[in-house]
Image (cartoon, rainbow, N blue to C red; front, side):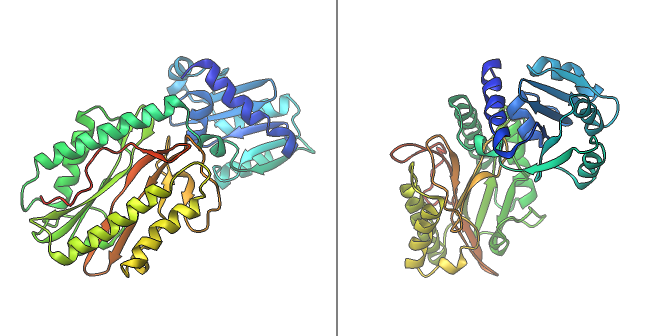
Length: 360
């Protein structure tokens, strides 16, 4: 990340100070710290104020932080919040903004008790996350690389698929292929669920063998250069019974309707409604129990959430998933998911993997 780009991100956050009348801002969410500073370590806190910043980390990361970040650095041998509060007190900041959704209660107690007499903590949320919703060209390229790797790993794992393999074995093979192809890690715990277990939207792989004549739901993502991908495909072990195939076609129709609804200016709830409307035609809308999609980037679940409660208008450069699904207890689950970039006139589908019904 170029130094100037990081500086511009920090300046955009500092511009929020006047609206909330804060003197400084404590950034504690690690994805937000990375977004604003470039530092990728697992223990950090960023203090911002008008005209300056300090990045706090512990001695394990001193060298790494100096290499990755353009921020002034403080290597703390004690707690990071305690060290940051020394700077807050020294500069006599009175209204101290903090990330209310990213701060542990114990750290909040430290913050509240460590301020000067008359100073106060000010809860804020969304200052960084709202800026992260629209991706830069470099961020989109990073996500594109993760999506390509994701699809290649999926195809490589399926080439090694054999009848009777257990869910955990296939999940392990998928993870292995992602790492082999260059992923830092899976973006989340890979989901492999077959038969009736596919009715659990976030099922964990089990020791159960994948039985012929059942659905096989795979939800996977890769992390590349800090950015993630997300893809779901539903396959058919040993061929597709007619009823399962009809349900699959209904979900695919819903997903295509959702994709067609994505464009700059459309609201998140309009995209969600397009998917539900299509499933309603097939009498399956009541089996769609989650939202249509979500943003992704440095985290697997980011704003915006594509749900019926979300009135937010989509903007060009947002990267979101479109993933309708149906889940029938004791029978099956079917979900189809792509990662897309919102454009002025529609969307660019990043996921190259076919969505035609596939037997394994």
